Amino acid sequence: MHHRTVEELMSRDVVRARRDTPFKELVRLLEENGVTAVPVVDELDRPLGVVSEADLLRKSADQADPSGRTPIPHLEAWERAKAEGSRAEELMSAPAVCARPEWTVVEAARLMETQNVKRLPVVDETDRLLGIVSRGDLLRVFLRRDEAIREEITGDLLRSTLGLDSRDVSAEVRDGRVTLAGTVEYRSLIPVIEQLCRGVDGVVSVSGNLSYRKDDARGASGDS
Image 1 (cartoon, helix red, strand yellow):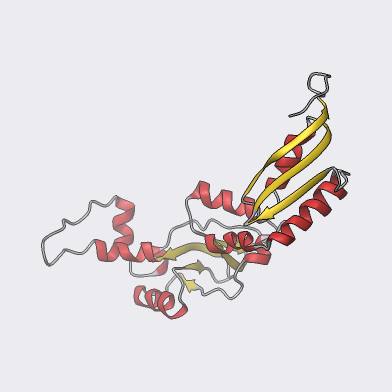
Image 2 (spheres, one colour):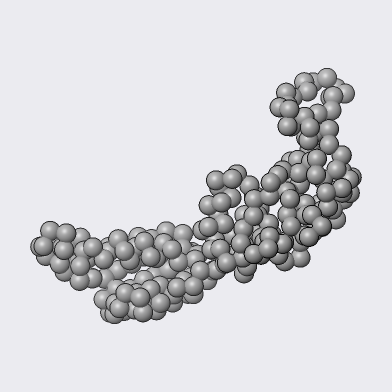
């Protein structure tokens, strides 16, 4: 099975900032390029951190409200330092959380989730910036055509990988939802098939009613 990689999904034309890029220039970079964050790189084009709209908005949030309706929020020391910063290296979230181009969507998504970030600079083996991948980029796998998903499941997974005949097990796909039907030789194969189907790019859910000829868990025959 082919899983789409970060390299296939990432944006290659990356808007960058330098350590000394001033606050207003950062705002202009975001506005003119229609992005919500930019990586900050060193002289060798290695990501040091990321400056996002949230990082820049701390400066506004730290200002007194002329109307007097909202109090100045309490900021931790590190948040205060950012709010008072004027250059990218003072404003960025660091260190940069990066991905590698050969990673799968699952690997990148898990890193975003555990690190609570919305995008990942993508770097090569020397840590130089190659691109950037966002949550939206990863979600593009779910735009994959149902027919392409069905062909991968029936051809690559069921027939080539598991050696199953299409007359025994079939798969229908609608809006990314996979429905399996048919009969397999052993009961233990059913969860394997379902798990492999869930790993196919673009699959939203897997359901169905697969039956079996032999219950190898108990040494008996029956139906699921």
